[in-house]
Image (cartoon, rainbow, N blue to C red; front, side, top):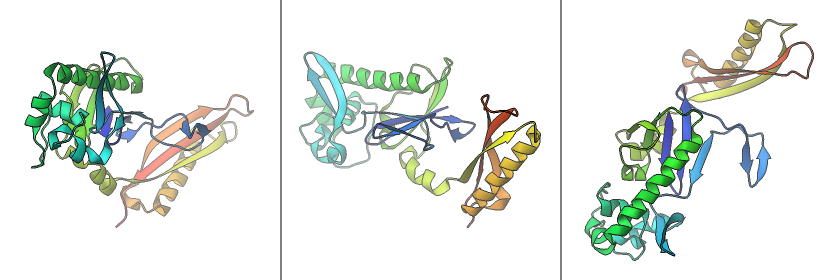
Length: 250
């Protein structure tokens, strides 16, 4: 399952068994780190992305008007064509803002530009979806964020496209309902301890840390167990990684 969120960029991640897939490596400022973070692809395409025609080619983003969309966007009486204006002009998006006038976008933006720019936007999204996938089969795509309404209900590589009710408030909902978790990584020798005992030991420690972080003990569960062989060490060595999660204790 793929999740698409929109803000200054369009951010695409994958949910595995209901939890974000983690990146194998994370770079910050060009430096490779050992920080664990969701595996996310971000592209410079958002509601405020500027649409331009250069040498006969359509360019969408990565430059954006950002929060000034309601001042500079065509539909608000401005002079800058944005991705939101394109979606409004095409009729695939509605905005509950009395200051927004989709008719301005339809009258001021040529129809050929609307069609080509929107096709370009969809191609950018579909290409990013292909990059985040790890298997060729179609995936379920969930659209969230304020600009998620601009996308079509069919996308290349998607089994189905879902935009939940109140999708524009996904950040707030996520912050209010997020689980408390903890992750433990420990090395074991299967010649000295059985596999079941090693996993149990790591799981108990992960649960303990989750409780210390504020999780309700009655809701704690092991969300993920990963075994990584360490072939260059003696004793049939492995690294076991366990993630435990639970609801916030109120």
